[in-house]
Amino acid sequence: MKNDPVSSPSVVFSEFGIPTQVASFGAVDCRVIGAEDALVEIEAAPINPADLNVLEGRYGILPALPAVPGAEGVGRVRQVGEGVRGVSVGDRVLLPHGVGTWRRLVVVAAEELVTLPEAVPVLQAAMLRVNPATALCMLREFVSLSPGEWIVQNAANSGVGRSVIQIARACGWRTVNVVRRKGLEAELTQIGADAVVEEGEGLSARILEATGGVAPRLGLNAVGGESALGLAKVLAEEGTHVTYGAMGLQPLRIPNGVLIFKNIEFRGFWVSRWYKKASRDEVAELFSRLVAWAEAGVLHTPVEATYPLESITTALLHAQRGQRSGKILLCP
Image (cartoon, rainbow, N blue to C red; front, side):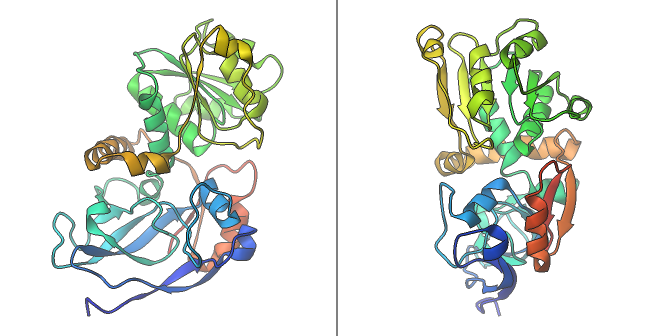
């Protein structure tokens, strides 16, 4: 039985295009379980912007087609190969990055699984690998921050933005958070934001007013265009401007002055590349922090709705709505 392939209900796509037109409910065969493998039954997997970009064919890494989408998720181990150690049947686990999680069953190398305590809520666990990991890496990879320092970010109500706010508060850093619409200040303040500023005219001056005139050394950009420029202008000399997204679909504008007179460093971050380069110990340390915060309730991402795999078209339409109150997840 262990060497028999297993068929799994799945979301599949065979061409790139409009997500709701190319993704459909179907089935795929899992590969045969090897001695070092585990069969995992997936409990929940989010729909992230990057997943939509993959379906559209405009992401940094694209799978060979046909493929199953889904960059992250959580599940239960249902079967293990005879050589597996450290992972047992019944364990709740985080799946490897980019394995294709919009399915019910998947076979993966057991050593790539991260076991989770039962106290971590399953929907929160499903969202740990991309947004919170991106936030934590950016907060500690580029600038050595001291307690009380300011960080400035745009897209502050996004999944990564909310994680930045919560992690910064847990670590003793302060955040000034730029958003693109009204009505978010109370919500973001409740999860730990020190200041919330709406995009628009005089953005840089209003950011500095919020920080009491203190120029942050770290700026996190997921929008581009004028918003990214506003962040760059307020950074301290030798500050670092990190871009990890392009929600505004506008390129970066880098004034000569911030390079010549302030020597601002412009960097990019992509968590997929980080996972490729990181050692097993670095990944384990990252998740020990994130899991502990999720278990304690420090890290929490709002969820607006969950859908079964069969409702993938409805789920994708919901995930693409503007001004949602939370994430959309698939629960096979």
